[in-house]
Image (cartoon, rainbow, N blue to C red; front, side):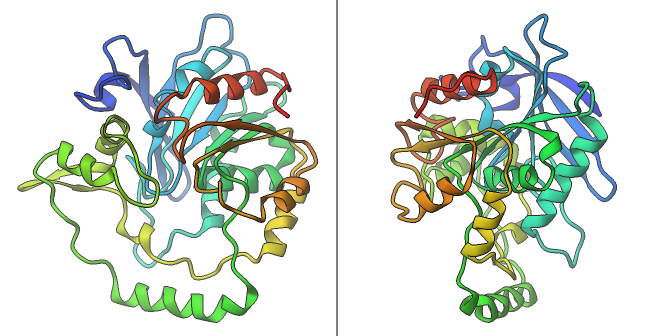
Length: 320
């Protein structure tokens, strides 16, 4: 792993008031070379005396990047090493080769290789996993598959993979293949980062202007005339194969790790009616209910999320 020290205010963006201030802790740009791809991310310094504690890996959601944890990471770093990962195709990480797609299970394989290559410094070789949205899905699948490596698991507005009925298998495959053949259109060019951040404020999971300004720059690259998204456009292509609900429940039932589900009262899961069955499938699950939307760990009052995560990782259990 290689890294360079960078003030968080530089890593994020100028003018991201409240999220990337002068007093923000120094974090480090990090790079992890895997067999077929190089992942990037950010590492936060630990408090003195906790360097040998279990490392915590933070895994962001779809179309986000490691700066999704700009506000949470410094709190978690009080109890041990913290590393926020840019998933493949996101942030500063590499893109999949031509002809490949961004399959869910490949993210899980990346995480498994990352842990085996770079995070075996503790005696038991375990890591804590904190995932938001897609990151929570990836971390849950990893914890189910490699229980001996997962000490504790936190899922933020995330509780298992998106599922589709078996009857939709062929239509989903057709849609994915047709999109792969047609390819992606030309990306929009924004005159400056602020304009791109304003575009990011809307969508499926809206952000405040401050949060968008913190998150967006790491997903941008400069071109003639302004900036374009550096995230791989193939990330928006449909998945060729989705899990059924039965398969999702089977993966959740396989999780042996103590698990915390942070349920945002205005998050993307707030209207889901099938969460009870999923929650009951995880044997050692606790739930912390917090105010906020899908990005409750980045936007608005994030203190309740930080408190819940830190207390849980320290071994406390008083949420239910």
